[in-house]
Image (cartoon, rainbow, N blue to C red; front, side, top):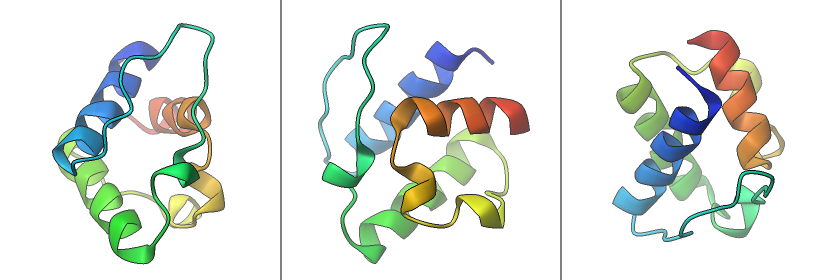
Length: 81
């Protein structure tokens, strides 16, 4: 799975959670903490990742700091998929 596909999947998960970010440019990064700012939203996002990418999210990604950067998260997920 490419980074672009993973980013689109993450944006789709956020959209399903009624968090609209819109499209991003190839070089642009998004600070997800601007949109995921409480533990309820965070856990829903993690569950969405697990369901969408058919994987268990490892413990090292279960913190706000680990999901701060959209591209950083996509890179980490790409390593795991």
